[in-house]
Length: 541
View 1 (cartoon, rainbow, N blue to C red):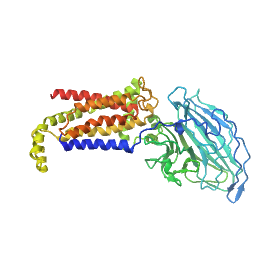
View 2: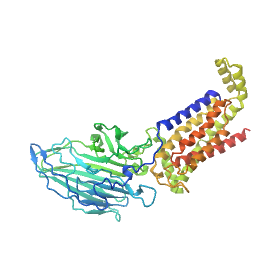
View 3: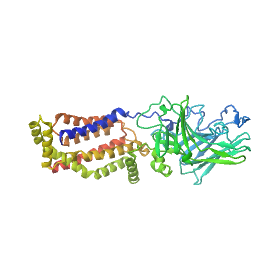
């Protein structure tokens, strides 16, 4: 391979490394993100046995030209919903969500760890799933007291859905009903918001359902994942940086879904009519982020009622589960707009392999072998080309010495030498370039797949989504990469050889903080490549 071609390859790899090392911060140990931490210190009351709290002061509401008298003071009450997938608590204060714990996912790897808590608000903040009516002729307080005959719902021993109805009456002007329908085998929850006009005067209404979340300004962030508002607007994913929310942000219409996400979990609201739905994002001085889906404005005649219908999804970013919702919710997994076309098929294949081996570490190794087999002919072509180029090095040095003062003539003679020996200088690096998108696609797959979270391999590796705690696999990976470099034919430029020998060192330090699942892929890819190079070198020796 001639000097310029090799330098071009080295430069390409260097650019990738510079991007990884300087533009992507190394992952930090998540200090229990809001969705993944039980917030007992910040909650108004414990989720397990919440005592009644004093309701906020009564508020007078303007309705048309008259004034609605304040509602009577009613104590807050909590309603428990227990399903095989989650346990939830609703509060009559605002008819909102007080707690939502995912039974199948723990905060930490230890078996005694608490389940993931999806609700995170500080004292005094309105809770998620409050409903307001901005821009309407009547906008009652979002935290008004609701009533319900239901004390608790249990779906653990049934296959039938069950409903929770919460009612709130604004004097004799309007009645609001929030009807939640729960399913024992789904993270999705149906929500119907009914508004009854109790007056003879028509009411102009447009409901807004709000997901409120505390955003800790002191929490450490990294470049590996996004935690904050997310939405699918006009067939494109929108992620909003919490620190950049100034004065609010409005998206839409044509909002298919919107909500709040962390790396592995999401709470999303899906409207029935996305083409007429907008999404508002705001942050107040209490570091509360509000994601509000605002529906179309409707006119409710006197004595009649109308409804706003939503689906709620509060659960894991599992591709199979998200895909079933049929609203492009799987785009919440941060595979990237371009690499998702590679990452998603690789994830599907990885999950298919897991069905048979029941170990994602082994599934990654098998996937590595399959990918290597697909690119095996290209790899052979690349190694053979580099071997032939190495044999031409003495003649290349002669040409360089003969035409060292005439670069144009040297280039012409070099290409003539290649033609004589039927060598394509690009055939050595082209197969490598083709494999780069596959590597980054698998990189995205292993970095964001919730399937690897708390998933063990063997011995000391008990979480494939975290780095190797003892750095054993990255060091072995660096050793295999060094051995591969020693076996790879290189040009006669001493500087070039030094650069290539430094690559294993750079990659080793780079991979120290990578998820162990990704390191395992790269390690076994190197091992197979060493075997392939040994075969080619022996055949052409």
